Image (tube, rainbow, N blue to C red; front, side, top):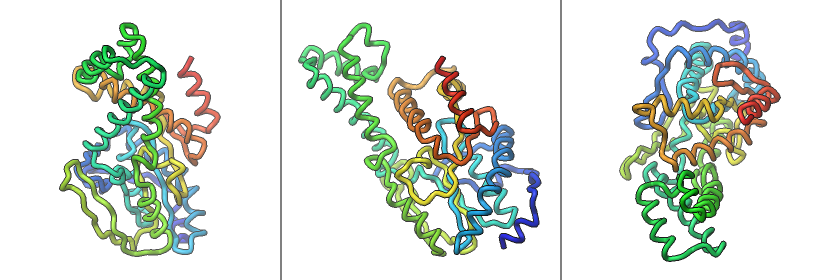
Length: 316
């Protein structure tokens, strides 16, 4: 089979008439928009990915491989992963797009609540351990929490002790976000292992936003050679068995601009959401050395050295 694929190279871009007809990832209720920019990026990535993928498939006893498409908010993970799967299937390599967002321990609303609880619990612990906790400050803190401003840096000038609360809370949040405390890496690693060891039918988790929206589908992988995992945390060291991590980079400024453009009237995210995104961005940057391909927000393949230079320039 791989020999037949090689005969079709070099790859020629496939004309896409209807993006709505392209199969998307398996996250319930997920809306995936595939616009011209996403298509252009996928076309840049795909030939490079094929060069890396074919040797992996050649060496696999079952001619199977796992690719991850990871990155921060707004980089087009879902759309690009869907297009890569589409291109692979068109080439004769069976591909399935799997969403990692099905694998936190908690449904979204409970996970959001747990993130906030972790931040606030650690923040208060920080005040206590630093000798800065008092009933008067507790009353002020309660007001800030009720208005969603306890993570807002703008209030530190008015309440200097809030800095200690935010630092401790942020550190606590770092020990939750993208860790085994938040995500069931063991389950998704098990799926990867079963797939690469030739299993033809595997139960995959589905998780919506409500308590009743949790179930499993039995998916037929008998004609599949590749799983494409689209996920912020796909390059995390806790996820084992990935052959080719693809990192879609965006600088903090580019992420902020995207979030503003997506929100009504150009409004920014809440202070807490901004903090979560900042922590996730730092995690992605720290994991970048493990990526086999790095794509800039503007759609250019970057070496790791170029990536580092870009991020340093962003900080200046």
